[in-house]
Each structure stands twice: as structure tokens, then as C-alpha cells.
Image (cartoon, rainbow, N blue to C red; front, top):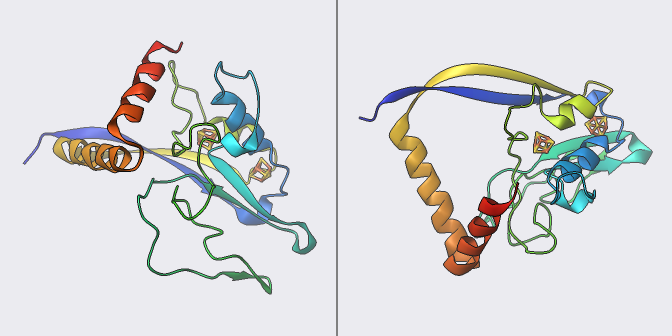
Length: 180
Ligand code: SF4
Ligand code: SF4
């Protein structure tokens, strides 16, 4: 058994009914993650994407989640307010079957990092920029096994090395460690 340690669980609650599709969340997320910070904005680099259907007034913000090396064997189909959406439309994965949640230049997977920065932000930027309150932020504390986190990190790194090759991963880590 590993050591117990406290972990802050960060949650962004999405109220789809309040989203008006303005895409401010995409703009600020991509600007925050630009290099250098705020030097550009490009929604393709955003870790949140808004699935939009203006005719039906349906807008669904979706956060970039885990990277996956292979597609799923099945598919989901959603119908909202009478409209059927594309398979995979609301999936959070960075997956080989589509371009969503991939850094456009390098092809590396994008994942929401809750605007990790030093010092910490009071709230993630997409939440701060969402004037309709479709996005709200919550934190709670939980006890977790330290070993488990290590294991998860190893699985993630193996998947990345598998897909992009160890050299590319090492180059990216080297680039990250010299950035401000
Ligand atoms: S900023 Fe808020 S209202 Fe605008 S698209 Fe994003 S989630 Fe929707
Ligand atoms: S929490 Fe930060 S990193 Fe995640 S989608 Fe929002 S702005 Fe992007």
C-alpha cells in the first residue's frame, strides 16, 4: 500500500443550457497556451471546444481529456432537441480517428490542464471568461494513494512513446523545460 496524500480535485461544471456559443472560452484557452503566452489565439489549439448548432440554439462545451492510442471499437450517437450529432462529437479523447484536441503543428495530444500555472490562478481562464456562467469551478479535497498516480503517469508516457516515438517526446520535454 502506498502513502496516502491529499489531493485537490478540480471540477468545472458545464451548464449546457446557459452556453450561448460565443467561444470566448476557446479564445482564452488557446491564447493562454500559446508560446509565448498570449502571443496568438487559435481555437484549434484550445483544450475546450464548443460543439455548435446555431439553428437549434444548442451549444455544448467539451473539454479535452485523455490521449488514446487506438480508436474505440464502438461509437455513440447523440440526439439533442431532435438533431442527431456526428459520432464522436462529444468525446473528450485525443484519438487517431480525428483532428480534434491535437496541437496543429506537432500533432501532439492536447489535454485540459486546468490552466496550470505558477502562481495558481484563482479560477481556470475559460471559467473567468464565460460571462453566461455556463462554466463554474469547484474544488474539493480527497485522499489518494501516491503509488496510483505514479502508475497512471507511466501508462500515459508509454502511450505517448508508442504513438510519437520516444525521441519526439524527449524533444518536447526538453522544449518545455526551457520555456518561461
Ligand atoms: S465562454 Fe461560456 S458561453 Fe461562451 S462558448 Fe464558452 S462555455 Fe459557452
Ligand atoms: S481550464 Fe484552462 S486549460 Fe482547461 S479548457 Fe479551460 S482554459 Fe483551457
